[in-house]
Length: 283
Image 1 (cartoon, rainbow, N blue to C red):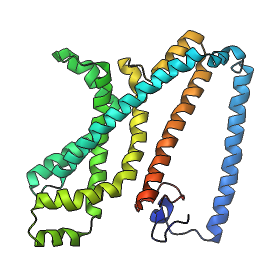
Image 2: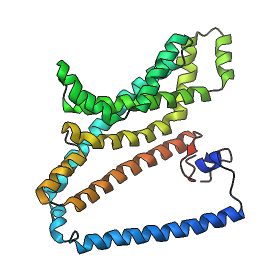
Image 3: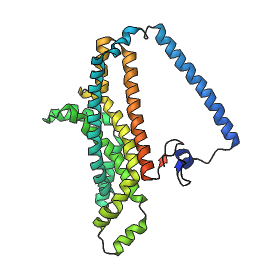
Image 4: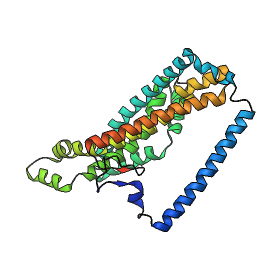
C-alpha cells in the first residue's frame, strides 16, 4: 500500500530532499558507520567470550520453566503499572489540555506552568519524592502507586500537549460553523473538537506508551516486582549478569516494537495523517 502524497516522513518535514551529492555522502557515511559498529560489536563479543560469559552455566537456567514463569510475573507487573499509568495520564492529559486552552488567562497560565513542570521533571525524581518524602509526612502508599503515579504525572504533561496539537488540527471553520448555529463553547468542544482531536492523536498516544513502559524500569527503587527487578533477582541467584540483562533487553525491545507497530496499524486503519519517525509512512 503506497503512502498518500500528502503524508510525510520526519525527514521530509525537517529537511529538503537530498541531492545526488548528499546521497553519496550519506551512503559513504552509512557504510563507514556500519563497519565501525560491526567492529565494536565483534570486539565486545570477543571480550565476553574470553571472559567465559557464553559458558552454559550462564544460560542453561533459561531452559527451565520456573525462570520464564518468574520473568512472566515481572512482565505482568510491568504491564500492570504501564497500563494503569497510561490510563491516568490520558485523563490528566485531557484535563490539563482543557485548562491550557481556557479563555481565562489566569487558568491558562496556571495549567501551562503545570504542564511544563511535569514535562520537564524526570519521573525518577518524582518516584523518589513519593518513596522518600511522603512517608516522612505520614503518607503510606503501596509500591505499585509509588511507581504508577509519578510515571502518569510526567506522561500527562506530554499528553496534554499532544491533545492540544490535536485540538489545533481541527479546522477552525468547523468551530465557527458550530458556534453560528447556537452551540456553546462546551458543546463545541465535546461534540465537534474533541472527537476529531482524539482521532488525530491516537497513534501518538499509543506511541507514548513506549515511554511509559520504559519508565517502569526504575521499579527497583521501590522494590516493585517488574520484569527488570525480577531479572535482578535472577542475576543474584545465578551470577549471570550479561545473559539476564540481554534477555530482559530483548523483551523490552519486543514490547516496544509491538506498541510502535500497533500505533502504525491504528494510523493506517483510521487514515490519520501523522509525521512518521522514519521514512516508513504509517498512512
